[in-house]
Image (cartoon, rainbow, N blue to C red):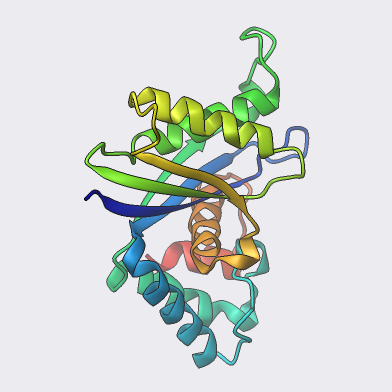
Length: 205
């Protein structure tokens, strides 16, 4: 029987014309049998810092009053957790020329998800991919991403790429952790950063 891997995916700053030049896509992943334990460990860290169980960990929520929580979470990821991580950085969205390649920005967005995720897959394992829900129109795109990713590995019966599914970020501590990590990568690759609670997180490791 193939080992089942759960993969939790997110992105940051995907929209054009918002002043953000950097975009990052990323995923944390581990054996499916370990996801419950990891989620409970993250909840325990929240409890240690007097945060509600349902507090949503997000890069955009980092503030001086919560910096110790986020540092503990980063330390957990690097020092204890069995999670693996992969990210793809787009350094300057202003250089994109979608017209030249006959595509929309949305087409390109899901192509970048494909590029991010295909390197995680090993055909000796089975995968569930959970993607943070971007909008209400992404369902058909996610189905297409599933097919393209499966076809890349000749997995026509979906015995390897079992599932590609959108979920809300508040439903998953692991998607929230992916959000934190890709947020830090994006922040570290901007040129307009200032000394803030976020820069302290980036500098911590």
